[in-house]
Length: 108
Length: 157
Image (cartoon, rainbow over all chains, first blue to last red; front, side, top):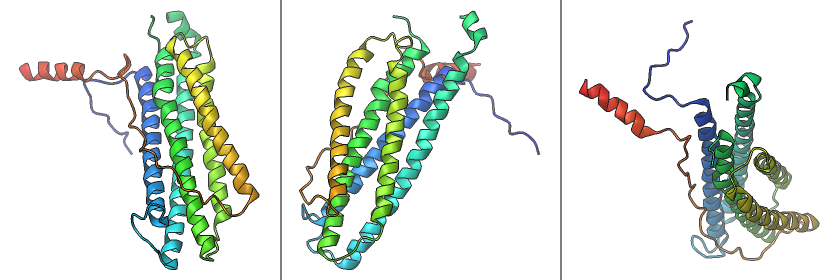
């Protein structure tokens, strides 16, 4: 089995740029999840009827269905959060590994 | 001011990561309020919520992960030998205050909800949606213009 070939590109980010970009990508994903949770909260509020936006009197089946959807979403979000935590830990480890090196300090 | 990777990472944490985490916390808080309203409606209708234990487990996991991420961010910023970027200090004071308020509220609510099986029925204040992330251009951001200039040179040849 051959190794994958990475095509030559004009611009390749340095390790420092990669660390910053990865941190920003984590922040953007967190922000996306925040938007998702906000939208879901608004949806539940509309359903429950505080603001009477969607339904006045939802039937039992609808309530149970929504409840299970809500639990599933929470499950997915918690899974995603675990992955983001692992990503953050790995990025910090990547950054530390590059700067504890005596050789690099000598060069600076 | 000397631009170092440490400073840029600190800036990313202070200006992008921690605000995003705070937005996440706020949205989660709002989501939990809505969930409590839904559970209250279910109880009122006599519909037993079978997965409340699972829900509690998810919430505790979420809060644990949130704290871990905040700890990683703050522990980076708290190392003074790394941070020479002065606005961070001012930013940190504000963030600590904000964090104390929000997490304090969260803890208070979890205590109240554990005391009684019926969650809040009070109306949730509507807030505006979370703000989009502000990605400030740093000296470490990839410079696309450089890339385009190289491409243009290639075309001319």
